[in-house]
Length: 322
DNA sequence: AACTCTAGCAACCGCTGTCCC
DNA sequence: AGGGACAGCGGTTGCTAGAGT
Image (cartoon, rainbow, N blue to C red; front, side, top):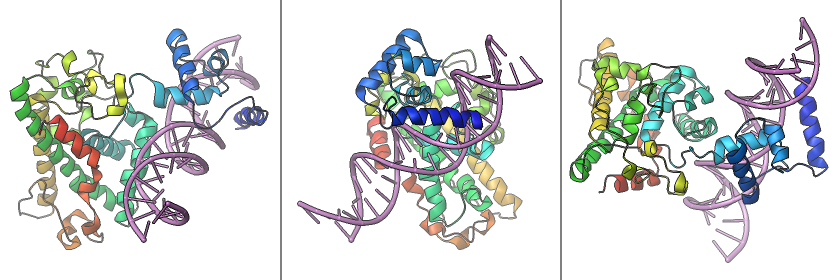
């Protein structure tokens, strides 16, 4: 676009003239921006940049605010729940990062995009296939995602045990993810209430009441941020950001898990595969996966466990009080 | 200890869409 | 209707820390 090009060119001139800064933001710049937004609000980024005394483009200010300085940002590891959601939503919408980010509270499109490009594409590379290929999608759907569900279920089971000791109701994420549009916590702007989980999970489970469960516990201020995995998020921890809850979350995870098994079995049954398929079962050779259409892949090299970092494991241990 | 490689992430870039005058 | 300003999106780049040699 010529217009944009001219603007960029002028910005370039300003940079060359030393009037505009580029590159990493300094603490002073961050403070200027935060303070200015706090007192004047967001928007009108170009004039904001000038008024705040920042030698940055409005674009740069906006990006810095949205991706780094916003108080409701969640930082730290992408949780298994979030990974599952990203995988599902990406399979639905493709590289619509912003749209996907709308359904992950506190996460930015940039963060999700980076996650996809680093973690997910890395595994596609390991499998020697294209990330957009049907084969890789199959691996994600029938191997990776059920594994995530299993992981979530296991963590939630531990949380349930811990919850019985420490008191029920510590289900910040699950409650926020179940809430509809009225709670103001995490209302999905476009999708129905079951959009937070793959629709087929609920369909297969045949149990929508979970989504509308009125017995959602109140968010407890005592749980706010107490189990946040992101120690670097500091005071920014939000009550609805704690990733794994208690009994209610466990129920959902179990349902999702059952549904994943059902989905998995359905696929196999549809292809005349009658042997039972256990959730969490892993395949170690490509020959065991012909029904998934991934026979040509080196499944053995696909390290499902490696999608979680050591930090994740540590965090789980801490959260579950193990 | 020094160097290289790599993953992860912050920031930038180019472009399109939308609003307003 | 047309143009300017701005917001927002997706792709790409470059820096940095940590791992490996």
